[in-house]
Structure formats: C-alpha cells, structure tokens
Image: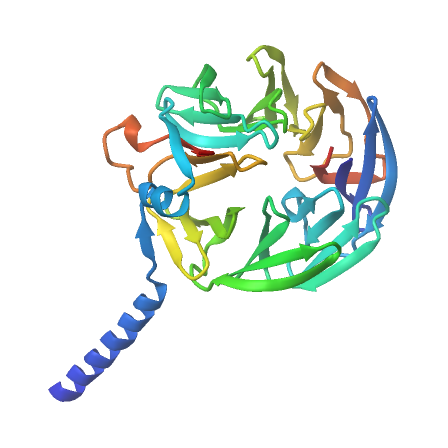
Length: 194
Length: 209
C-alpha cells in the first residue's frame, strides 16, 4: 500500500512539475531589457515623480506624458515632455472616488476627470487644462462624463448609468450644442476619430 | 468623426457616424449591428484607423469602411480582447493564447501565436518595437476588494520574458525616444511608503553616432 501511495505521489509530482515548467517564464529586469534589446539606445533620464501611479496617458504625436499619482493625502497631476522634464505639477485633496486622465495627440489639451457618487446618483467633474497648465474650465455634470477627442477640439458625453437620451457636446470653451441624438435613440457609448 | 453606439426602442444596437466640422455635427451613416439584446458593446470594442473601423463582437471582429459603414472584412474569434499597435498590427488575446495579426490594406492574416499561457489574463496594452513585442496583461479578481494584477512581457523572435516591473511603453513616431512608465511595484501593500518603489519614468534615446 505504501509503495502504491509513493508511486502515486511521485506521478503527481512529475505532472505538477511539468505543468509548472510549461508556465514558467524567465524574468528580466528593465536594465537587462535595455542592455540586450535597446542596444542602439542610451538611457537619457530616470524620473521618480511624487506618488504612486494611478493612471497615465501619452500624447501620441508630441510624446508628452501626463501622470496621475496619489499618496494618502493628495492626488498629483504631473506633465512631462518627451525628454521627461516635469513641466508642471498640480495637487488635489485625496477624497474623491475615481480619477482619470486624458491628453490630446498634440499634448495641448489635458482632461482630468473625477467620477463620484452621491445620494442622487453618479456625477462627474471635468477639469480641462492647456499645455501650460492653465485651467480652461472646471465643470460638474450629472449622469455622464466627458471624453476628450484625440484632436483636443471636442469633448463628448459618455453615460455613467448605462444610457443617455440627451447629450451635449463641448469644446475647449465649454458647452456648444445639443442634442447629438434624436429622441427615439438612447446613447450607450461613444468613440472618436478626429 | 464621432461614432456613437446607440440603442433603439426594439433593443437593436446601432453604430452612428457623425462628422464634426466647425462646431456643427452631421450624421454621415448609421448601421444596425444586429446583435442579440444580451450582447453589449462599448467604445473599448471599437478600433479606428484612417482607413477602417474595427468592431470586436466577441466571437468575430468585423471591419467597416469608416466613410460609408460598408463591411470590408471579417474574422472569426472567440472571446477576444484586442489591441492595435503602432505598426497597424492587431494583437488579439483569445483564452490563454496571444496572436499577432498583420493588416494588409483590407486583408488580414494570422501571422503567429505569441504566447499560450496566462489564460486568466486579459490584454491591457501592447507596443511593437522592431521585432519585439511589449505586452501588458491584466487579471482582475475580487478578494476583499477588486484587485488588478499585471504581467509585463517581452516577446522577441524566439523567446518570451516576463519583466520584473510592470511597465507601460511608448515609442515616438520616429523611434528616437522610447519611454517606459512604471506606475507601482506589486506586492508592496504592507511595506512602508518608499517613493523609489512607485511611479518611475525611464526614457531611452536613440544613439545616432
């Protein structure tokens, strides 16, 4: 009986070992990746901005980077150029629900979005900045959030509660027109290409 | 162009294409996606390039002409998550396997299987730099709270590596700059706060000499 048990244990160990081996994957450090795979490149800089990273977004054409970080006290919005120079940082009190960040392809428009819930339902706060960090607007909207177009010219609504049957479009100066939808349609989501 | 996913009274899912010119909005075309009422799609299921608009409908990916909404191609998939790389390749994760598809004008062909492990992970981000694929996978599960776990992979011609830090990558159009962004290191919940373990941006520049 002991021999059978031992044989079963040995067989199980072999199979478990094989499965583990199949899932094993060699680990690399970033330094090793740089040395072995970026041999035509030099490390220009390493930057350690304040806080733990929550979200980030790259400007596809300019290469500018916005980083949204936090610690126990504050949220930080860092704006870095393509050479990782921190151009500006803004900090906010850390007592909100969900924070997101978007940047236009040219890096000229940045949308900081804070989503929250109260007894009346979901609402969003959208703060728009230009590349210098100047605030363009700061608005609070019930039931929907704004999504920044890649061009930075427009912001369109996305429902927070599953659907919308009214929807406003915004530009960098604020609300521009209504409605996007006819009355027999319900918007569930949006996507951009401009 | 602005694409709105909409629902009519009879539960049909519509994709409506608007053009935005000088603060005016014009409807260009509308397509009934003929999906069952139980199937929802969102903006993350839409991929848009200058030439086409792709829709990930879970069991198939269809490609529409963004000018008129006509179907130009279709490929069968299964519970797929996808990602468009800068070189107009599509990386598709189906179950435990990750595939690279190349786009040839309106044609598509499966090029290669990249990995066949991490079955519970979804595709989060990907970037192709020369022959190297930098892929970030994400696994969300609920313990006491919702927890996201990430894997950062480097897939080169014949080898697959896991990078010890979870990194997101960016490459400038001319490839002169490569940026690696780390948001945080995993498994540090009980450790004292040390900024060295969190946000870090590393930038590489092409040595032209």
